Structures are given as structure tokens and as C-alpha cells.
Length: 243
Image 1 (tube, rainbow, N blue to C red):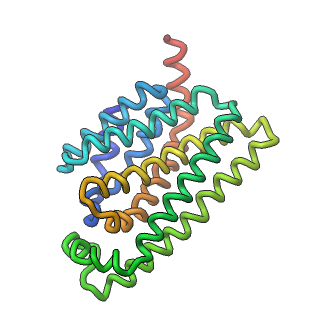
Image 2: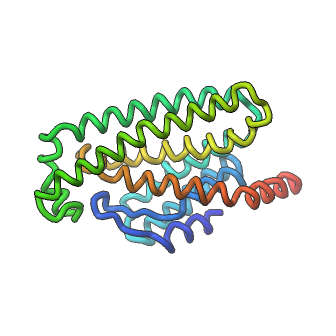
């Protein structure tokens, strides 16, 4: 699983200048590590494979944060998959991660709404190639703000819909717990990568512009992991039988 994570992360990686990082397809396998191997070994496989991809692609300074973030994602998935019929997990996760997402989006929306913050970061944005000139700063900021507002509304709406579907229907619980696992893991990724950039570079405005790209990666990862579920769940069952 670590090898599959490494390959899927590194073979189709597209650089995004303004975060000194890249967007890739590996998150589908990061999530699948938690499904197949459980929380402990899944976290190790996801963290090792993703960190090695960072080193291989020339982002060694991000290897340790990536290990922690991807391991956390797989650990959460493995934790939820231990008991897919547990409604209590759904209620706690829906409440906790909805609050986390709304709080996070409110903070970064407030930061990017400040013209002073964005203007102060213009030199970094120009140097990293996010904008070609200062005239491009306004449209780019407007696009990012629109994407943040959309995400702020859509993701909590998905959580609420899942909660309402599970609340009075035991048959849906296992399926929707699988989706909750992937959604919450993706939320962790976006929040922690933003925080990591802010801590490493001392700039809390520039990484906001990476959120739309991370959202795309988030969605692709969920789609890939969901498509792989018939295979990963079968492998998980075979491993459990062997033990």
C-alpha cells in the first residue's frame, strides 16, 4: 500500500507554484490504506508512501509534514472502518468536522477579505507565478473568495444531508459512514496543509490561494477511493481471514 501510494502520488503530479507543492491522484490510495490496513498500519503506509513521493519529486522540506498529515487521514479512515454501523461515530464526526470546517473557512475568508493582507503578499504571489502582474491580483482574489464561499456552503450541506439520511435509517448507516470517513479525512488534509504553510513560511495569506487546488485533490481522492472500495474491502476481508 505504501508503494501504491508513492506511485499514484508521484506518477501524475502537477506543480502548483504558489504553495511550492503539487496536486496529484495519490489521496485515493491514502484513503484506501486506512480501508485495507486499518488505522495503525494504514497510517504508516499512507505516511511513508506520501513522504517518499515528496522526497522523490523534490519537496523534501515537506516530507515530514506530509507524513503526519497523510498518516492522520488514513488513521481516521481506519478508525471509522472498525465499525461501519456505529451511528455515534457519524454524529460526533458530523458535528465536530462541520464546526472545524466552518471555523476554518471563516478564518481564511476574513484574512483574504483584508485588502492589506493580500497586497502585502503580492510580491510573493508574483515571485511564485500565481499572478502575472498586479492587475491580475483582483480577479485571482475574487475567484479564490468565490471558491471558498462555495466550499463553506456545500461541504457542511453534504454533512447535514448524510446526518439526516442516517438518523432514522439503519440500512444506510454503513454506506454513509464510508463516505463520512473520506470527507473528514479530506477536511483534515486541507486544514493541516494550510496551517503547515503558515507555520513554515510565516505567511497566512498566500496558502489561501492553494485551497481551491486542494479541494480538487480532495474531491478526486474521494472519487478514486470510493471507486476502489469493491477491491479494497475484499482485500481487507481476506487479510482479516488470514489473521
